[in-house]
Amino acid sequence: MSGIQMDAVSVRLGDTDVLHDVTCSLTERTIAVVGENGSGKSTLARLAGGLAAATSGTVRVLGLDPARDAAGLRRRVAVVFSNPDAQIIMPTVAEDVAFSLRSEKLPREEKKRRTQEALHRFGLSDIADRSAHDLSGGQKQLLALCGAFVREPDLVIADEPTAYLDARNARRVTDHLLEDGSHQLLLVTHDLALAQRCEQAVFVKDGTIAAVGKPAEIVAAYEEHLAC
Ligand SMILES: Nc1ncnc2c1ncn2[C@@H]1O[C@H](COP(=O)(O)OP(=O)(O)OP(=O)(O)O)[C@@H](O)[C@H]1O
Ligand SMILES: [Mg+2]
Image (cartoon, rainbow, N blue to C red; front, side, top):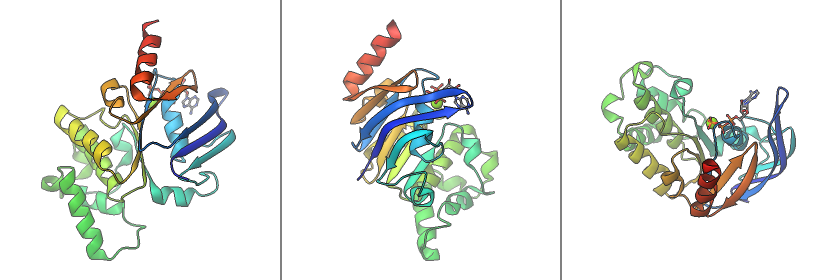
């Protein structure tokens, strides 16, 4: 089964029910997640990425149970956050991208080829040998995305991935996220025009999924809620 399925899921953190009664089947290729600050979008994204555990209910991501097959999920799912500092591990840009391929059983030359191709795709070839930690916020975010994509994941979970990017790089990244047809995408965003470029949308409200449907309808429902 592809996509993300949740049945009666809750997530309790400390003494707060951050998510409750979440039931959904998200099978379109590109899925936007919209909702107010603090509504539970990032928690939903973390849950789908195996980075937060369900307190009750069942979760299946690409047919896998994140609680039982974390390794399988890590191989097939890439998660990108809006804070790029937390995602850099190796000293240089090229090393950091190559590090994402460490657990792939690929010949060295193939790893090199894929690293160079990904650096080129994200406009990072010219700074491949620079210190990764000294990059600007936007460059770090491009690096994090590059590291996610070099693994050719089946599902990309991106939580406000363009927050640090200038308009050209934001477009480059969103085009790549949305139009490269080989992966499924769960995209958390406050950019409602971007949400409408997806094929399906989820409206998260007060810790649960208020609606799932066509992006135009979901965005209209969310905007109506915001206007209240
Ligand atoms: N570790 C935690 N312990 C307790 N409460 C938490 C924890 N993480 C998140 N929360 C709470 O859960 C709620 C949802 O947080 P979440 O980060 O999922 O919201 P969000 O929809 O992504 O918001 P934003 O649009 O601001 O990024 C918030 O009230 C937050 O304070
Ligand atoms: Mg968030």
